[in-house]
Image 1 (cartoon, rainbow, N blue to C red):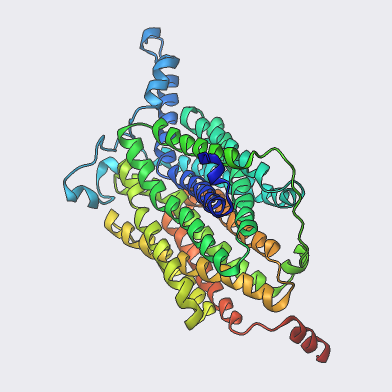
Image 2 (image 1 turned 120 degrees about the vertical axis):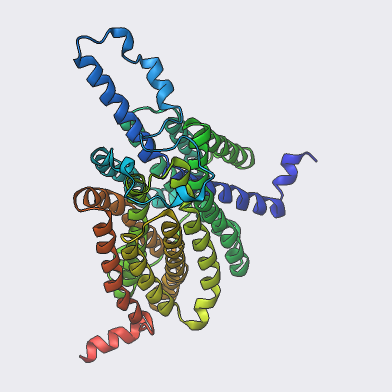
Length: 475
């Protein structure tokens, strides 16, 4: 018996499906976060190069030989060059981690960095926007042709996106790469979770498999930003994306060998219509909590690096390291409250999670050094872990209680809420940060989370659908 035949046996095939979905979620979320510390500095470098070339071309005394050629420009863009106020390597002196905005070098590029807020915001939001559009298409498509063709297509699209990220030197190509990631991410997440649910039919076994798969998501978020910043600082922009392209080839190749995704297999399930679920007030509250908590973290990711560059003279590796506590605390909170919330009340965990996020985001405007930012990012990650781990479970509970217990549509609503948060967060947060400043932006989204938090208390004892209809008729 050869290796491939052995892997296709039912017992081994389950493990292989779990491994493939783990790789898919790791890949998508690592690519999601790896660009956060890279894009602000890289776009700044592109604009600085373009400005210098334009200025040189306007001086008649400058000879053509002094203007950078296209080939030399590519070398500059793929090097580890930094904005003027950045150090070229991480300092071993801890005092450099606490530089305040009083440093005169930090304000030399303020106007140009403010312009980058809008560009970075649109770029980061494009993935979630495209995925928001693709999800309602990919979901029904898997019912018609099965999970394997969209899954393999997702790996191929992510490979194309990472390759574009690696070699793009213009804003337009970077935007295209980020948008392609949205399509690929939709294919991987929808088809991957469908494969798991189809393979693991026992409820307890399925829950354990889902937990392992989502640890890939958390791991991608944990290592993405620090990995990207360190690789960008010491190796260059291309290296981290080429490694992710290799992971895409590994996952896609393994899936193709095992499943030969060429045959159409229809999957059809009937449940409560999507529109009916969207009219359920309890489901809307849960979706709102998920949306606003993710919108807050998306605004932080889009605007914080530029604010640190302006006020703390942060180098590129520091721009990613500060997000490491965010991801670690998210992983810790999601595991703790996934179990604990059942005992103390998921509605209460969500309430305190949104309050914590509101207080934390407002506090960002008062941070004076990178130590403060690290502590606040840890609190933000903990709060989003509290809300995500509890509200995702509440979604399933509400369907059991009030609707037909088929969960695809309700989790599509949850994913749409996440996508809206990560789409509106950067696209709206970037222009606001550029016009009124990062501290005011954080204050606004903090107040929104604090005001929405009391609605989570309404989830204490949601009525059954028949009880709700009885009360309406009685009134």
